[in-house]
Amino acid sequence: MYKVYGDYQSGNCYKIKLMLHLLDLPYTWQPVDILKGETETPEFLAMNPNGKVPVLQLEDGTCLWESNAILNFLAEGSEFLPSEPRLRTQVLQWQFFEQYSHEPYIAVARFIQFYLGLPDERLEEYRKLHKGGHKALRVMERQLEVTPYLVGDRYSIADVALYAYTHVAHEGGFDLAAYPKVREWLVRVAQHPRHVPMVD
Image (cartoon, rainbow, N blue to C red):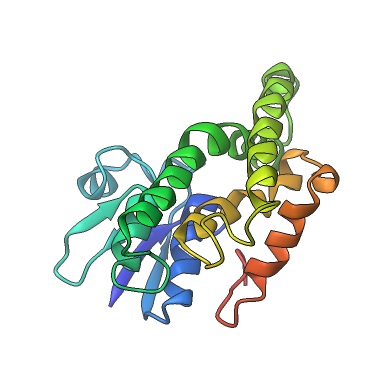
């Protein structure tokens, strides 16, 4: 059985929770409090020297970290990861986009508002993050005008990766009214029969 070390409110951790449910895989969850410094303990750093959640511990005790890498590991051989090279590369393309052009803006703005309560000293940074976040949402909107999912007509880990923070973007002050295809996609993803919410 897998063991996940994570924060239920973290989008990166939610990716793993959602993927495990989509694949109907048993797991246990070990809560980790980021704000209390629990990712900086010697015990945690022995699992992930980068000091971040999520961490997936395998049955033999070895650990995997970086949420999108874990998604690829879990989805290997399943319907959620195409075997055809071009489609698989497109999945990776969206995962790299998520980590470089989406998460640094939408997730960080959410952290400042949802976790920290929008302190005055970070308001300027928060406003600048919105510019990058809306650019990322426009990229997604353009793709979803053409295809129902980010990689063609099938739900994949590309969708899992980007759903995680997009569906809570409002908690970072992002209004999705201007992105009708993104909103339709959010509903489509949530309609999967094995879908689970971020917090039960």
